[in-house]
Amino acid sequence: MTVDATLSRLQSYSEELDLDLTRAEDRFKWFLASILFAKRISAEVAKKTYRRFEEEGSTTPEKILAAGWDRLVEVLDSGGYVRYDFSTASNLLKITEELKQKYGDLEELHRKSNSPTDLERRLQEFKGVGPVGVNIFLRELRGIWEKAKPKPSQMAIKIANRIGLEYVEPHESVLVRLNLEYCKKRKCKVCPVQHHCKERNNIH
Image (cartoon, helix red, strand yellow):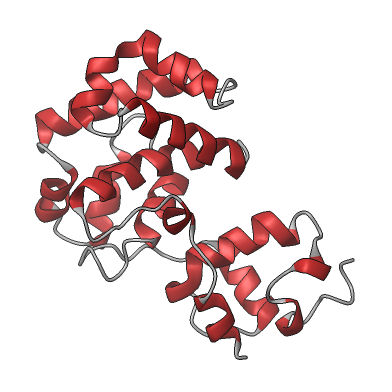
C-alpha cells in the first residue's frame, strides 16, 4: 500500500471527535477543540476535555457565555485540563464575546477576510489564539473554507520527509498526529507507516 493510501485510512483529531467540518456548527466546535489542543497538554486530555464541553452542551458561543467563568473552570478541570483552567476559561469568554460582537460568527469572520493571511491575522487577534492554534484549526479546513491555506508546520514537514511523502497539505493533520503519538513516544513497531519510514531502524 502506498504511503498516501495508508495515511488516508488514518483519522485526524476532528474526525475522531465525530465532527463534520462541512457544517458551520461543527466548525465552531473544532475551533473550540483547537484552542484546547494548542496548549502544552496531552492530546488525550484535550480530547477528554472537549468531550466534557459536548456533554455540558457548551459548544456554541452563546452556551459558553451562558456557562460563565466558574462553570467553565469546572468543565475544564473535569476533563483534566487543570494546568490551564483559569486562563483558558477567561480566554474562552473573551474570544466568544469578541467573536459575536465583531463578526457574529466564524463564518462571517471568514467572509470578511481578504486572503489566507488576513484570515490567520483575524483569528490571532483573539486573546489566547496563537499561530499553533490557528494552524491546528485551519489545516483541517483546507478545501472547505476557501481561505484556509495555512503554511504546513515544521513538525508535519519533518514526518513527511521521513516517510517519503511529497505533498504535505492533504495529510498534515495525520502527520502531526503520527509525530505526537508514535515518533515522540518511539512506538515504531506499532506505527501504521513504519514500512515507509526511512529512519525506523535508527530510532528504536
